[in-house]
Amino acid sequence: MANHKSALKRIRANAAKRLRNRYQAKTTRNAIKKLRNTTDAEEAKVLLPKVVSMLDRLAKKNVIHKNKAANNKSKLTKLVSKLG
Image (spheres, rainbow, N blue to C red):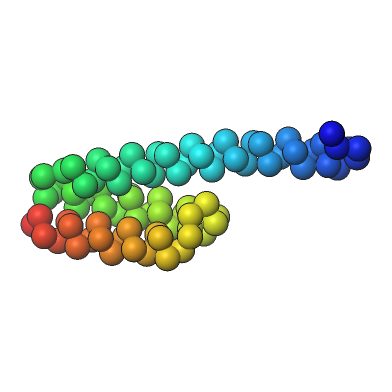
C-alpha cells in the first residue's frame, strides 16, 4: 500500500487514465472494424477521415504506437481506394 498522499493520488490518476485509454482504444477498434466491413464506397470515404483522426489521437497520446497507427492508416486508405 502507498505511504504518501502523492502516491495515492498517482494511483487514482493512473486508474482514471487507464479507463479512458481503454475506452478510446476500443472505440477506435470498433470504428476500424466498421470501416473494414463497409462495402459502400461513399460511406467508406466518409468514415476514413474520422478513423484516421482517431488513430492519430491515440498515437499522439501514446495509447498505441505511432507505427501501428501509420500501418493501420495505410491499410485502410488502400482498402477505401480499392472500393471506389
